[in-house]
Image (tube, rainbow, N blue to C red; front, side, top):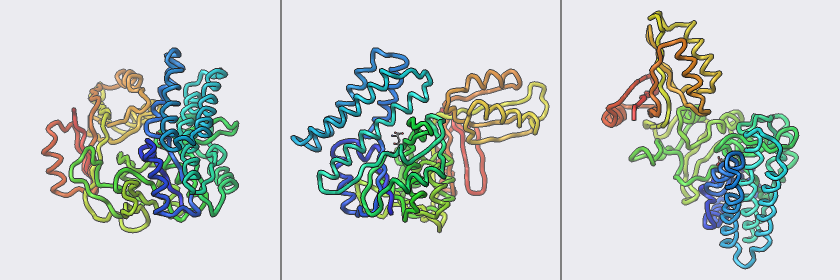
Length: 418
Ligand code: ASP
């Protein structure tokens, strides 16, 4: 079996959905599972719906109505006069969402979030499934929540691998084309859970792992994995081949093209991952597999914006060594800071972190009671893997405001003030 994943950008409108059918015709779809995200920016819109429910209830019904219209207009464009059954299905899903709010008693934001945002994927896969069947591509709709079993850590649920492998193998029909949702799963009480934003790549890897799939293909709006984000860096080039280890390194440093959790399950079973363009399905794209580290072997550029650089030194000028550094790490863990980079000298310790859960102020308050603290917010972290002389000059020339630089054999990193 092969697993294909189509992200939100590939199905952002009716034309995108038609293109999915074209890609399937070109690439073949026998014995294939397709994992699909919510259409366009639907997950963001649903996040706003959750926010309104808690903070601005007067805005709630309008936001839901907008979401309904967005999907109905795609249905209309796809099915024309034959849209009635699909209009009904969209209506049913939206009513389910409304009734969820009506009956909800839970005050836990993350729990409510997960019950709500998954509707994006339920809507998109229902519409795409109907369209594929409409154009004679026989397809079966599968509820991912019956397959992907997780704990109840809402918004970033952890997989129960053993159970998930069993449920997937029991639910997925072989030798057919099956469509299911990325991003969502369910806990032991069958409440919906989500795997974290951008989690659909991970879903594709989970299904591939459980099914011993021959490959996973992520269809994107870029030709494959490039050696830098083309929105940030100039003259980016396509990477033809990347080893699993190198891809994990790139994802770790912040290359957003592949969701970091996706790679481990694929590496464990040596299932190749292809990243290809849904705009040019004939292009070879990038293969992430066992083999060469990087082909061509060129520098790879990564930018992580909006990071925080914290510089610490002891209040009494004593050394920053094991005891106080371990204390700092315990606090970073406690306040859920994702550490990007560390550097220390005898009396100072610098750490660049991602303030993902907005807990910086809490952390700083404690740190200030124990250390002398200097903070630089909203800094950019640049990483270059496999740097060469040219790569170094190009970055240095661009940046006057380097706050910190760190160089290892394969990797150089700069923290830059904005
Ligand atoms: N729809 C979800 C999101 O926007 C999951 C995904 O697209 O991967 O984060």
